[in-house]
Length: 295
Image (cartoon, rainbow, N blue to C red; front, side, top):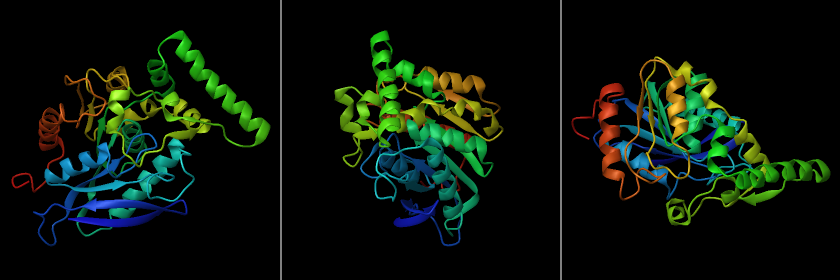
């Protein structure tokens, strides 16, 4: 069962969809995941929608949301600020905790890529978060970008874009817009995994916000709450070392999984079955649901 919902975040109306497993009986409050989409993505027709449906099938309520400025939510299009997305996540938690289907003491976060970084940071600063599952996420924006623009020429081009954007803003008062693929390169063959509702241009200030965002600084504060860092070994979009470094800084009850697979999208056709089995096993141990036997 799905419910289209809206909630407020800093005066903006944001869009979400609540998934409720069919096996839920009246009065039963279930552990719940808030699912966070990737870089200027959307909750719909996207990789995180696949994530949401997978987790629902495992016996959890799931609330997938559009961040401000994305999808069906209000806000300036493409103007992503990392700490605004943290605020959106915390406001989503406050909202969904009031639903009768949801156990307010067992609300976890999961996200993919950029959404994973936001999930980790939010889990570190908000003790209401019961667990965090990061899928191909990152913890240090500057180091991530260096891995995504690995040659001296590519790094010079990327940092040149940042500097040109700062200069343009100072001189005109307006943002300079660039292709999303100039910020986060994605091989052509993987772009089919992006939502058709995703945005393909962003202001340079978005890249600058990501550059300075460091979930690594707060990841240790998630402990002793459970944390899963899941990262495909051959990720050609977000460097795998990001999850390794996060694990090195994490505290108790953190687990690192690096399965084989070449995709940045672990629920793509070739990797989905393996991903599902690994995540189901982790959830059964660290964040079980009363519907696990029937899901």
